[in-house]
Structure formats: structure tokens, C-alpha cells
Length: 310
Image (tube, rainbow, N blue to C red; front, top):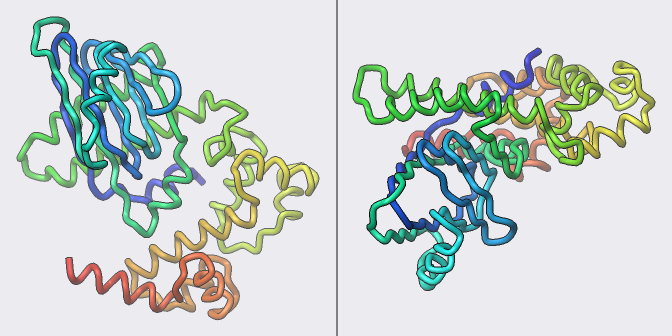
């Protein structure tokens, strides 16, 4: 079972928004808050990423940033420009950009950035799985693949060729897979989250077991024995690496699969419950309501009513 394929297939990026920035000489841009994944690629030149809190980061041509969610941050030609830009932010709404440019000649900087949109039923789980901050440098081996892919997406985003929407959706999926592959090759062992779990051979194997047969009655004892660890050591390491206990992770994934089936299929609630490991409708309804806040039938009605209105 390829877990990454499993997750991307479920999440299905629905839309992508792009913004291209071209500047010369001294300039700056203040980017508004986002509670969704944001990315930025430097196509030419270089600039500084300056967060509200934390150290600035120099971005060079070919560098790529992926941020799970962001407070307002700045992109500037030089660190002195950030002070000027910050002074212009006063009174600006949280969702508004601020742009400052001296208009003088100088080195060209070209950026392309945007954000992903995932269906609201899966957005919380998707955000949990992403790293808080990922910087792929142009010198990294994987950056070349991403740069070529971003260039293709940039060309396609401005086209009106037949099949445009289909091509864009597929390219977005490929880009997400490429970005998600990167942390698995060099994740810091101190990080917590899905990527950290995938980078640990034992936890990765446990995740494969759960994703490979979600309907099986998995227990902590059984998973620990299956991957050659003691129960206590496995439970501790899984929680330390992934951030939640094994049972919580499995329950969250089952509920995500249930949401998808309730929205996009005509399967009965009993059939859905059985397919993801619940032996009765009542057990499934109780678990679903505890996590989602409404019963499965009400969730299905609400989501389908919303789809008809749109």
C-alpha cells in the first residue's frame, strides 16, 4: 500500500490560486494571513522571507517554500526594506496585500506563489499532515523536479486549451506528491507529525498496516507485535513521532474515509461502517458524531444540500 497515494487520492486538491510578482531594485510585499497551505517559488533573482516572528530567510533562484498556514509575512529585496513595508501595514485589513516598490532599475526578481484548496470535509486532516514550514533549496536534488513542474503549471494556468481544468488538477496533484516526498528523505527526527512517522521505519510499517486494511480490528498490541516492538515502546514512539496515539490516528483516518463515502457515494451507512472497521451502525454513528459533531445521516444531508446550491 502506497500511503501517499492513498492520502492524495482522498484529499483531491480542488482549486489553486496563483499570484505572479515581478520587481526590480528595492521592493517589498506584505502577504496577508492564510489558514490554508501557501507556497512560493523564486523564478529569478533572490529575496528575503521575513516572518512576523523568527529569523529572516534568504530565498535564492529555484528555492521553494511550503507553509501549512501563515500569519502575515513579508517578501523584500533587502532587510532594510522590511521596516518601510511594516510601516505601510498599519490600518490594512488582514486579507489585503501591501506592495511597495521604489520603481528604480536593478536586478529582476520574479516569484510565483499561491495556495491550495481542499474540500472542507478534509481540510483539518490535510493541515495536520503537512509540515509547518518546508524550505526546498535550489541546491537540493529534488528542487530541479519541482522547478520544472512549477514552470509547466505556470504555463498551463494561463492557457485556454481544451482540457485545461483536467490538466491543471492532475498537475496540482503531482506537485503535492513531489513536495510531500521531500520531507520523507530528510525529516528532522525532532519534528512531530505524519512526515515524522513516515520517516521512522517502525512507525512507517505500522501506518502501512493501518492504511492497507482499515477495516481490520487493529489493536496497539497487535500492531506492536506485527512490527517487532513492545506495546509500550510502540505506543510511546508512535505518539512522539506522529503526535497522536495509534488508535486516534486510525479513528481519524476512518472518519475521513467515511466522510468521502457519505458525500460521494450512495452506499448505505451500514455498508460504510462495516467497510472501515465498525461492527454496528450505532458504534459508527457514535464515533462519527464525537469527531464531526453531527450524525452520519445529517452530515450527508447537509453536504449534499450545499452541493446542490452551488
